Amino acid sequence: MEHFYTLQGEGFHQGRAAYFIRLGGCDVGCVWCDVKDSWDATRHPKIPIAEIIGSVKQHISAIHKSSRALPLVVITGGEPLMHNLDELTAALQAEGFETNIETSGAHPLSGSWNWICLSPKKFKAPLPGILNVADELKVVIFNRSDFEWAEQYAAMVSPACKLYLQPEWDKAAVMTPLIIDYIKEHPQWELSLQIHKYINVP
Ligand code: SF4
Image (cartoon, rainbow, N blue to C red; front, side, top):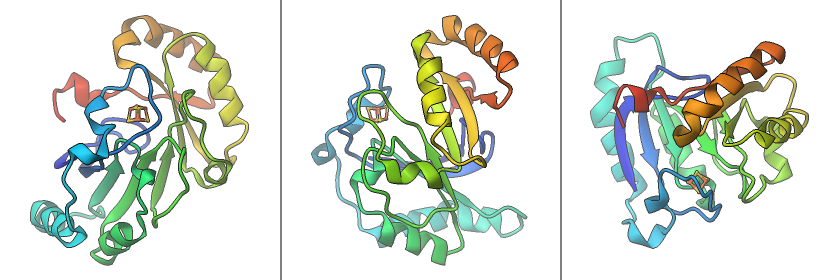
């Protein structure tokens, strides 16, 4: 759908420079989805993997040569696991990139990942296989009942999995104070804000 160099705005890697690859296609159907244009994969061109890798290298390889950090590539969507990601992620890692994914987990896991961010959605549940391997659980809080729903998933991921609560963007004014109170009572959770939207970057 699109690919661009920006800052990761959410979750554990929030604030890091990252090249985003947004894949078309999603059948999860969140009512509050902010990338509904991604849903129909046929509306977006197919791009050869070599061409995508070329774009990533052109944008960030030189910048990161003098950096201590591995250049970070985030695969998102849409729901990226609607595609088999083995070949794309193998090619990215072969070039020395760190591969992170943002997924609802609603399709079978493929690809080779340095970091898996699982963001389960009520509209289509994650498949059980991803729960144990998620590095980060990020739950979008749209209404009060989502706290209890978040805890159901926190009980299913591994003990090492980082836990984040993130206000749904249009409800942020109402839900963020509730999330702050909740985290103070349940400090195993941390706050994730979509900082890219506050600082106006993609
Ligand atoms: S999973 Fe993501 S892309 Fe798909 S409908 Fe939900 S928010 Fe939108």
